[in-house]
Image (tube, rainbow, N blue to C red):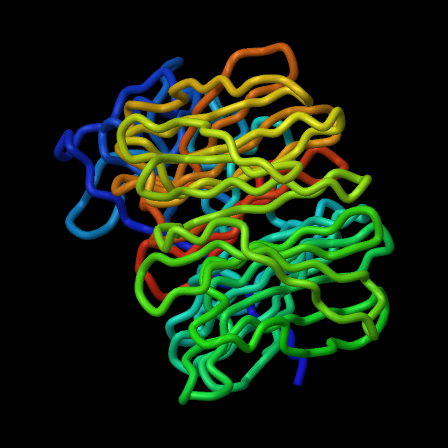
Length: 444
């Protein structure tokens, strides 16, 4: 049964490295370096700037600054109306732990003012048990968010959706035995939703590749995409040219062979499947399709990070140990890849051009996972989790890369990112507790 989920909010009492003193700052990064999950605010009374902290004792979106007093924070609650720098996360306080206020027109809670300086606003989508692994996100043309994720406790695939002007709703999508690992979601040009994932329908043959399809305005239709034994790991799905495409790995162990499947979007059509690489050393992969239906796949194997397109495979990077790739195509047909090779790295190939790569972030540790998306103007957006936090890298058209913190408390595993048509940025991720499915939103 579909149900409305109460959106709970993070509220933390930070540890301050400066003892009982106020923490002086000029930017949000100063607060992060001091070990504080807060923002840098102007103090009209002192004509200086101090770090302000999320605190459950403050009403609405107010924060508390001042000195630490035992386990709590002293001094008054303040309205964060004068943010000096928006590079750090703000937490929407929810003192009574109940459902948040009615959302306003921005799609956020009514006590949050959505402005370009509001920073990242963090909420929880689902914290009923051990949830949030293997998440995937898609944003449609109306700004509605669609996400899939795995419920570890129940072995279910779950679906969450949030209209632009509404709250998150969640429901089970497939409750078959251990369904929902490696989920991936994509939208087609008609508003239909496509999900591929790993499921154990027949325990005698191991897991298989499953497919869920929901035409716009209709219900979910579940089916098998490939029942070959030990198939369906590391799935990635995309649409283009009136068809749906999936890449996945067939493996009885960690690594295996890379396969590709495709079918027309019409539900009565069947999957056509073929191997891409049969060297038994492929793991993570990502797929994207041009509007014509031309398909790109990037994947990592023991010999490096590679790109398959138009029937051929070429290297992207072979030095080191590149992995955890994600792929997005820009409106001109150029390919963009985020990945880990000690640092956060990025590779770009213009349509019909050659691959180039660069380091984006070497200051915050090696990413465990990466996710990439391209907005309608060609801006590049990457979310990635390291051992010290969840981060966001952004490159506007014809501008330099910018890196900022989304959640300094961190994440545990995968994140997924999607820009909406109105300039907002959405990220879903498994939070630092390792049990909750969390959400971050950056105002336009």
